Length: 157
Ligand code: DLZ
Image 1: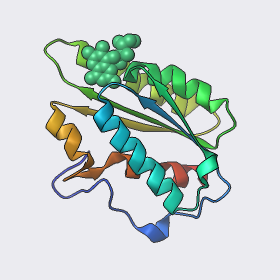
Image 2 (image 1 turned 180 degrees about the vertical axis):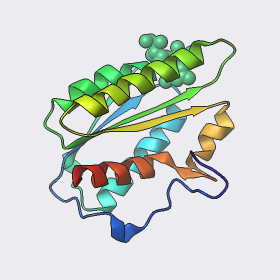
Image 3 (image 1 turned 90 degrees about the vertical axis):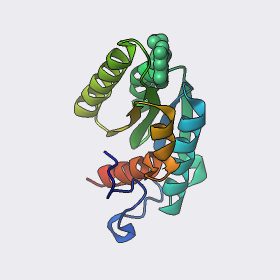
């Protein structure tokens, strides 16, 4: 969680191995595209910063966060070393938010536990758009950066 004292983009650069030669798949939801595009940009830039080659980053889009589960499960089979799933769900007036968040979180967690490569949870779930903007390059940093660092660390786990 991003708290007052935690910036999603802050990390110890020395703790992240050089990831040259490793391959990463990123699955991105089209819902709240202004947010997910910024998360994707953060993840991509951070992977490149740690030696990943441009051609070793594979990006595929899915319509909504709920489709991240299927998208990530397909990406797992594509020969990459880790998958990052990126989405943004913003609370509305109905319980739909809860079902999408729970379903997507459960689906990604199940993939992470059962597949031979790590599946990284890049789903932002917020009460409003401002909270999402705060977490995709705003005052709480960029969760895309955090996901990229996590993916690299898990590849070398
Ligand atoms: C339907 C829906 C709604 C209401 N809100 C969001 C959202 O805030 N973020 C998101 O990524 N997707 C949303 N969706 C779409 C669902 O994730 C999914 O694409 C549809 O229910 C079709 O399976």
